[in-house]
Every structure is written in structure tokens, then in C-alpha cells.
Length: 525
Ligand code: C2O
Ligand code: CU
Ligand code: CU
Image (cartoon, rainbow, N blue to C red):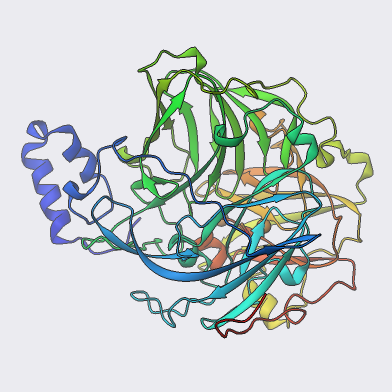
């Protein structure tokens, strides 16, 4: 339950409801169930704000092997709600940040400058940062290790190898203890990795391949972001933003589209359904293309997971509206305003009819999915726990990792070892999307039963539901060194459900191999 004091505004709502609920228009009842303090008139009606796509990042230079980018994290004032200026933190001043487009075999280097203020303007913490490219098998010193921080006024160059198969990744802040606030303020963006195999498929591409970055927010009376995580339980906002816009409306053509859906919310899980009841086709998960597409009528989406889906608008008539709805998940606080996400308005015949198929085989060789349990050399048990007012993994917190000089680990697989990890959540009051850095895994089972159809692809986050044990199979390939494993409910992660494992014994030290440096304008990358 919320511990916040009951405000005068709440009292007004309560008395208005008690006295005249029947006479109230629908919207007023809806708002009474929300959490934002801003005037109702400042919230747009659903499906009135135009849909936008985040900008694509441009390299500052390229050479034979590498594309170089430079971005400055800045505080900006932007409009989420029409006509309302809200302070945000953006990569390159954008929320969501610019999408980075990468191809397998070409390295990317990103210089991230921390140009944020020395103190958060309202929450008064120091916004140090650590940038994590979620989904990349990066070296430990470029993985956004939480304590490898970059202070305001410093910069750090991150190197991304891009040797993995095509996938939808995202980069977001991971700074120790303030990941949740930093990500909530806007430090999150997409990164798309493609490869020849994917490019050879007849699936939608170009303007028919659309990023969908979801994030829920709540607003103060004066239009600023409100942060209320209910004693680190989670933050559940009543305003649903898609690519930074509330409940937008997107005109679409009568053909297939690929949507790369990223749930960048701190704590909100979603369950999607189309208002028409028609199925969606899942083609890729966190680690890239599935072996075969899966038709589903519902998708459950925990935080940080990516689901790439194809929706076919050819079956609708021009003028028809298809709403992406949210049926909600257990233990996310839903409001009436969170039951819908965005609308697709079928507006035109296709202007391009090519790349308009979903073949029955998408990926003949999805690496993690080819693993079998007989390859496994160890079974590790991880329990996600609430105890003594703290979140932990097996009773271990990040604080203990720090106290150990960053040496303490919960597992030490050899390089290229295959292992089974069993993650248990004994609570009925929480779900935990658990993320394991570095690896892609195959979900073997959930409480002894097969995973959901949308989970039948390579994953790096798994929804560990209430009273569930999930069994995962993974290979510790690509790198050696220490990597984090944590809950992606970010208030849980910050307080302090995060630990680490080490692959091999001789990997680079994430704290010392490439520390941040003081930033001087004009430094050449
Ligand atoms: Cu998306 Cu360790 O994070
Ligand atoms: Cu990650
Ligand atoms: Cu959690």
C-alpha cells in the first residue's frame, strides 16, 4: 500500500465520488483511480497525440571496422503531456534516446558524456551513470557494471563487439543505487543489431519495422515526473507512454508491420491483446529471431524483455481502429488509464508490398535454443528474496558485493560451460523479471510446465512469477569476467536485488579496466 499522506486533492476526489459518483462522467471516475496529481485537463484523451519514432543516431565517423558515436546525457525540458514542460534526462537530450543501428561484424564505440547536473533538480541525488547495452556480450568494463560509474563532468567510451546474431537490444542507465531514477528520467533507448540471415528474410523492414518503447509515468501537479516507489516495491504510473508520447495514435497501411516492443517501465508488467481479438505473430525475443514464429492472442511482457511481433493490418478496412490493449498482470497496480496503450488507425493501402511475409522458419540456428540439458555441467539455484526490508538474490545484496571489493560471486562457470540455473520466487506478492548479463538462455520450464509460446526464443530476462520456479539453460560464451544478475524491477535492483557471477578466473576487472575520465569539450574520439 502507498504510505503517502492523503492530500487535499485526494479528499476532494473521495468526497466527489461518495456524493455524486453516479452523476460523474466516466473520465472523472477513471482519474479518481489514478495516481498523478496533475489536473485532469492536462492529460490528453487517448489516441489524440501523434505517434513518433525515436531519432536514429548518426555516427560521428566510421572506419574499416568501427562506427563511432558520441552522446551527451543532458537534462532537457520536453513535452510528454501536450503543452506541459517536464524535466527529463536524455541521451543526447532525447527521450527515448536515439536508436543505434548496428550490423553483425562491425564494432560500435559510443562515447557517453555525463553532462547531467551535479544534483537531480528535485530528488537531490548525484546522477552518476553507467551505461549498459542490454543484450550485448560486451567485455566486463563496457557492460555498464553498476559501480563502474561516470560522474557528472566525466565521460567514458564504450566498445560493443556486435558478434552476436541479430536482435533488439537497448541501452539504459545502470548507475549503482540510482538506476531506477535515471531510467525513469529518460535514460533508455533502443539499439538494433542486424545480420545477413535476418536481412535475407522476407519480413517487414525499413519504415515497416517500428520500435515501440513503453514506459509508465506519473506527474506532479506542476507537470514534473513524480517518483513514488512504495518503499522500493515498485513504481506504477497511470500515464502510459509509447516512444515518449501518451497513448498515441499511429496511422498504418494495410499490410504487415514488425514492431519491436521494449518494456522500459521500471515495474509495470503488461499483457497485450488487440481490440479486434486477432492474433499477433511473435518472431523474436530478447536474443533475436525465434526458430519458428508463434501466433498468440496475448503476450505477457515483463520489464526489460523484448518481443518483436508482426501485426497484419491487411485484414482490416481503411478507417478501422485497432487498439493495443493491456489486460494487466498480477501485482502491477493497474488504473483504468493503463488498460490501453496506443491505437493503430488503418489509413491507407500499402505503398510498398515487398517484405510482407512471415516465413515458417525464421532462424534455422538460434544458438541458445539449440542447447540441450545433457550438455549441462552444473545446476545452480537462485532464490529472489524479500527479507529484512531488502531485496536480495540468495540473501546476497549488491552492498555485499561492494564490501567484498567486488570479488564475491554466486557462481563461477568456466568459459563455454553450459549450466542450468533454477530461479525460485516463493512469494505470492511479487513477480521478478530476472536478467542475467552476458548470456542468452533457453527457458526449459516454469513450475515444471513448458514456457509460454512467446517465450520460445532466446532470452536474457525471464519473468519469474508468483510462487514459481523457472529453469534456464545457458552457455557462458563470448567473454570472461564478472557480470551482474538482478531483478529488472529497477527499485528492486537498486535496493538491492543484484549480485554477480564470474566466467573463468582471468577476465578483465570491470572496475579498473576502463574507468571514466574527466570530460573536456572538444576531446577527439
Ligand atoms: Cu537492462 Cu542489468 O540491465
Ligand atoms: Cu543486460
Ligand atoms: Cu524484483
